[in-house]
Length: 498
Image 1 (tube, rainbow, N blue to C red):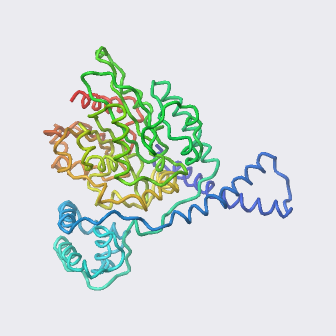
Image 2: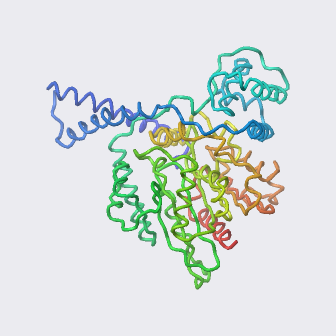
Image 3: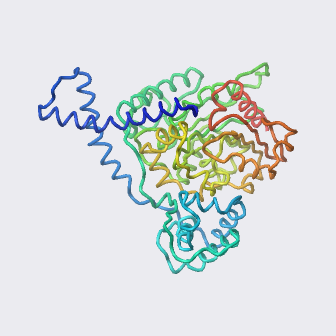
């Protein structure tokens, strides 16, 4: 990952500006070329490339951008008691109520966040509506009064000059991606496929008709002989032959698919002197195309996702699995990360919850998802600009976050994981989440050094919950170095033995 130095900042900001210029320059060149007003004649290859970039922008990107602005289809509203229960779970876990409100209102001053502003926020957060509805006035008033008690003061009446973040009601924010960018995605995807196949993973493709649903096209779909039993999901599978260990279900996060995890997945069966006579641990690594920097169909609903994963596991005869998830890049300013969100879906799904055994969350965003640190932060450092531009502003990712992601479905609480063995890996310098607050919440302790015997890096062990802490790492960096990756792999192996 890019660092935070001045040279990194200049490099990232310059790269983003140059990428922004591809579309307007291509359109301008194509228009001038068609009118015969060019003072020079570029090389033939450059001429064709600029024409294709202009056509792609005008014919594909702009119409699709307009299409993806359609209103979100919110899930059915929970009953009043369930909404109140969710409110109190959030309310009891707000470490700083003033900053909580200010950040949800995009950094607005306290004076501008008045009573009606807070009510607007609660309407979206717990009712998924944007306008006042008299049927819910009493409920919204109750929540507002409780917020006033938490603040220790009465909110000023009326409406101030503050606008709260209401993700599913706002415009889908996306930026153009050039054909050159998608060529890079094609190369990354092909590299991933070769590596996975080399390490004995087999690709389970969609139907040949759905081959045309993804851009850039995936040549592997035409070559693979295994057909996915699910309608939409594709995945990589390594057979499970162990008689004493559980297989692994892996869910990736937002980014470029499975590429950041290929070493981790390959190393899950390294022996390191261990007895291999029992056979290998099987792995199913799900691909979620809508969050993998591609032009594809919109993200599935939580029930569709759970049902498709259930079909896949049944097809391979896996009735109990270790779930490993990573929330790769819930980018800025609208902070995505998806693996732990899907985990929340699975753990709440009646059938899938029985199939899930131990769970390993790596850089999760689901815990304390109600806090604004997880959802919003304006980028300022080079690594934050990198994640913001190359992550959340992709059209597929952006649509998923603004129209298919509903925070109440993705949030996890300690009560949700009490019935199973769980390990959580957190990074001390995580720019995506407030890892220290999540650590304190999971361990029920603000004093990490006492809890771990005075170690900065360390492993905290609870009854059924372990927390692995990487003091000097950023989001996702635990996968990058062999030493830290080996610690993740050891945790995964231990859970498979459960």
